[in-house]
Image 1 (cartoon, rainbow, N blue to C red):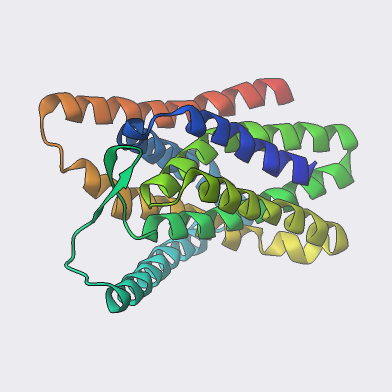
Image 2: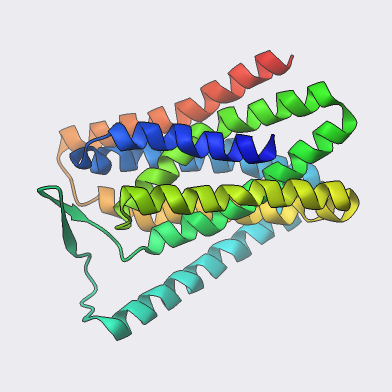
Length: 256
């Protein structure tokens, strides 16, 4: 269930993103921002605080994670600027007849790291639920899939924005989803030790989502200052958040 659940959510998201035209990517970035912020503040962070029982420690971990991702991104920039001429601006790449901005893979790398943490924790939670009761395990796995699809759509779009091809974006997302299986196997072998790491991993996952949304994606939206574009961006961000809220309510009703 962990393997199928992780792969299914990625494939479902990829099917949606594959059908999107290249010129839609800039619009879907706004949706991705909403999905990331909604998932981090409404799903991941509350679970991390509940699991740890200590809000101060969890939020401190998030803060430390944001700083760590900042340093990581600086290292990626430093490496890039020593390989190619770097003038501090985002280049344009030509994709299927359209000029498309990318960021040297920085936000894509950040989101893959955070998603791997998140998927690992999902595997731990699925295993714990199955060890309690098979029906509870099935419901938990279905809930994970439902929550992951809108977030994975956002992740896929961010990878495209970072200059990944659709094939590479799908491949890297599928590799990241294997962390769900790793988490489930580790939890089955040593549930107590695996569960003790859950709050920290969830906090780091939330940190990566917040960092990518606020540091990498939102600044790009400010390049379009006209009223129509601003309203469009706000509505798409709200749609991303709304998707997370809606799936949460649907899963709660099914579980109830």
